Amino acid sequence: MSDTLAQPGRSRPGALPSRTEAVLDAIKHSILIGELKPGQALVETELAERLGVSKTPVREALKTLAGSGLVTMSPYRGAAVREVDRELARCVYDMRLLLEPVAAGRTAVVSSGDWGEAALALERADQAADAADRSLANRAFHRALYAGCGNPLLVKSLDELRDQTALVSSAAWARQPSWQREAQEHREILRAAQAGDADLVRELMRGHISAFVARNFPENEAE
Image 1 (cartoon, rainbow, N blue to C red):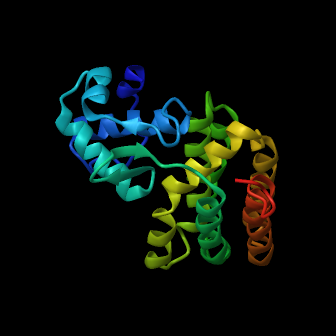
Image 2 (cartoon, helix red, strand yellow):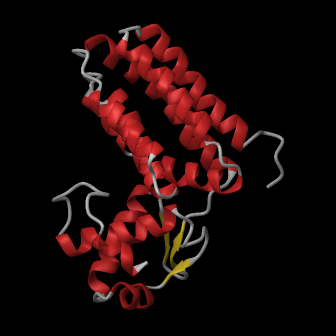
Image 3 (cartoon, rainbow, N blue to C red):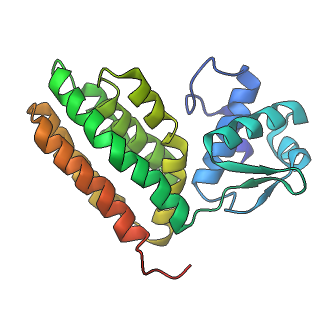
């Protein structure tokens, strides 16, 4: 995990002190590639030693990750990687299903036709070295589709789901790699957006979100 400490740009720059930001990025990356397993305890002293830092940036990073839903904090058990189950997946994706098709459709209406950021995110996903890079590229694609909707509250709500979405998708891919299918769905959504077809964007986005959770977390699946 120490190799990931120097990798920049996985979180918002300037939001935290640079050392804490780097530690946060490293822990997040390790969670999303499955190096740190769901339910695994996150011991500050162990993480600090592995990353070559003091406990302070580790503690602050864990608090931030708990706020974004990747880590759980207990007064008795301490911090742990959040476990992904069908209930979590369906809660996250139900929220996305309510909000994201609307936001993406509105972005398609008001966009000036510049979808370069979305296209670049698809290229990054295709070239990703691991599940973490792929998840982060995919969520960058989705943000490019909804960020221009004109409603900052809607954008904020979707932004707050991004880390949990990445956690759920990485857990699903570990069991059943399906990113190629999702990449094709992304390309179809982008083509509709480039054509300015807001109705089709909404329809495709609803299908994309619904199909993922139905495929990976079906109602009749045993826990």
